[in-house]
Length: 109
Image (tube, rainbow, N blue to C red; front, side):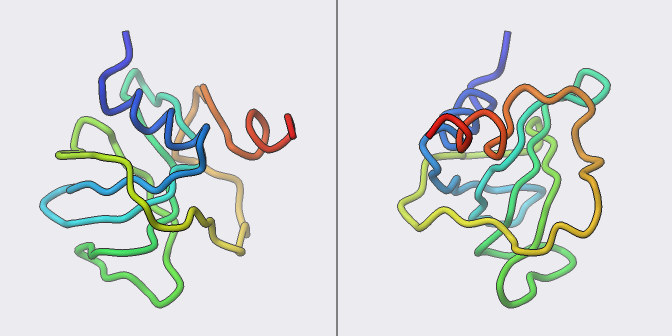
């Protein structure tokens, strides 16, 4: 059974909404792109557009792989949904993809 955080990230993908949360002690504003599991752990490939991280956030945002068990106080955000324009390598974040905005959401339109 998926966690409440997993379900929130799923709805955010389907509605192209940002997620506002805390991750490993850092405030984050992310746009989830792919959702699934790796070795049984719920994960999300996101594009971080605001907030901070231990490694810093470059201007324009950065791709982040989040383990959802480490996400705290997640809620839907009001900011615009975006994703990075650089897809230089295949994603390695999620082995078992449940939902991918590029396949499951955008291709339905």
